[in-house]
Amino acid sequence: MMANDMPPLEKEIRRRIASGGAMAIAKYMELCLTDPGRGYYTTRDPLGAAGDFITAPEISQMFGELIGLWAAAVWRAMDSPAAIHLVELGPGRGTMMVDALRAAKVVPEFSAAIAVHMIEISPELQRRQRQALELSDVPVSWHRSIDEVPDGALIVLANEFFDALPVNQAVMCADGWHERVIGIGDDGELQFGVDRDPLPLFDKFLPGTLAAAAIGEIFEWRSDHIALELGRRLVHFGGAALILDYGHLESAVGETLQAVGAHAYAEPLLAPGQVDLTAHVDFQALAQAAEGMGARVHGAVTQAALLRRLGIRQRAAALKAGAPPEYAGPIDAALARLTDESRTGMGRLIKAIAFSGPQLDTLPGFET
Image 1 (cartoon, one colour):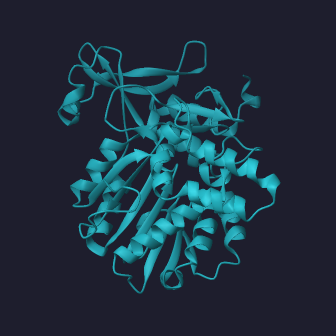
Image 2 (cartoon, rainbow, N blue to C red; image 1 turned 45 degrees about the vertical axis):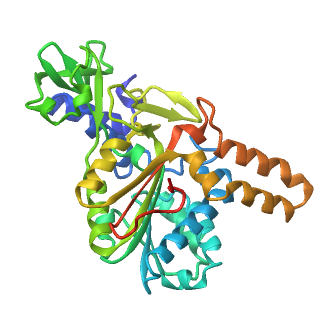
Image 3 (cartoon, rainbow, N blue to C red; image 1 turned 90 degrees about the vertical axis):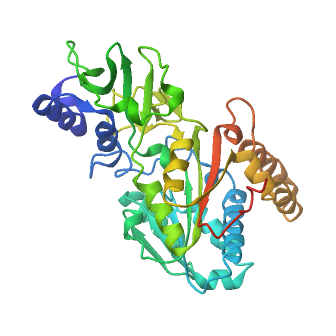
């Protein structure tokens, strides 16, 4: 690619590599997704048929409605505090929150107690969220991180948020674990590589199950900051957090970094800032971080199991009963897609986990 044809973000990435050496994958992912004015999430609305992917709230109103009722049930289990922060991490177009607030109106006292906080870094998506929520009768505010949410009891919702957080990678070599990095190859293209020096004491912090990793295997990990902050707040102020995302239940080796554009897989290094980058969530690591702060962990279960326990089949039947006959097919199709437990179905691939303060023994959908 000629320099004049190169996207501005790729020029910046190449400049940084040329001046500072190979780039950590987490830094590359951070720049690609969140660079102001050039990052994927800061410059576009990626959702829907015209975008690059679709999430559960965009498939059917049933998803957000059940999440809203889940939040109301948690609030009641908390002894119905007079004021509570309802927080959504990475709210997309605001669709899930709109559906959740509409469903929550069946518990008027809960609706009256809510102050909504949307955690969003994208100016374009924030604009879409403001449009979606402009008629809301609850106070709504926007923040760039959960650290900006005021102290107090809270219920946190996060659907396909953690998989877009920057991920680090390490490769097992003959002399130990080395960080996987991105450099510029002899052909002038961006390429993956391995840092020359081993990561000091890295194996001391790995789960014991990874002690026998073979040469060439890859391990991924993320910062624990958000999970730690959730755990801290839930323990100190009370509440719960519900997280749904693609991921694996136990820490394990294996590369899951992927790029998606126009609803198809893409090459992660070919178009920085032009495609979505994600990596699967390590639910064991996420749970350990929250649990380390004293929070209770509930689950994980599959998305299909959670939605069925929350009553998605009954909600689908009610929607069909109140709608013209031609809506029955789309409602059934949405139900099937959300709860599809085939090998590649989102009902199986997406897991749900919840954290709570120690005073909440059980949470809806996670009863054993």
